[in-house]
Image 1: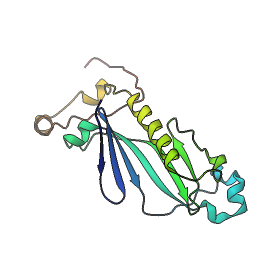
Image 2 (image 1 turned 135 degrees about the vertical axis):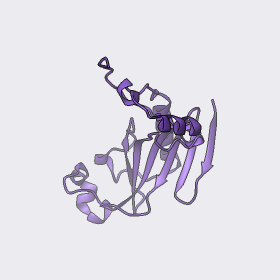
Image 3 (image 1 turned 60 degrees about the vertical axis):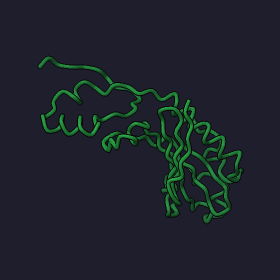
Image 4 (image 1 turned 45 degrees about the horizontal axis):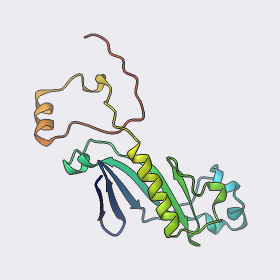
Length: 171
């Protein structure tokens, strides 16, 4: 299995594991949650509203060939978000991310062990998120120009799908 790390600048990192790429992207702004968000039921925020302002690190999953062949139409999926506040307290939402949930926000500070756990969970999810064939109907028609352009640039749209219904009408 291939594992490779690449620093993509001040706010991004890339981790390739087998045929998956996880992109970690830190947003440069600070956010507050919508007034209806469950996070407001957390006593840590109720005690001090300033604790609600967080930075966010998004975790995206892409196929490595999508980036390698510049298939710009290929889809990546947001599989997790890490929210960190001024006190370095954090919580995580995403696929199979259970290390710290919204109601536990304020109980744990982000550290190396927490990051390792988050990354391991993201890798495990990505490796078990299978590549599925897109629905037949999505590729039923193509112009000569589209076909030649896509063939020349290896840009047939690909992405991981959770599921789809296969149904086709005869043409």
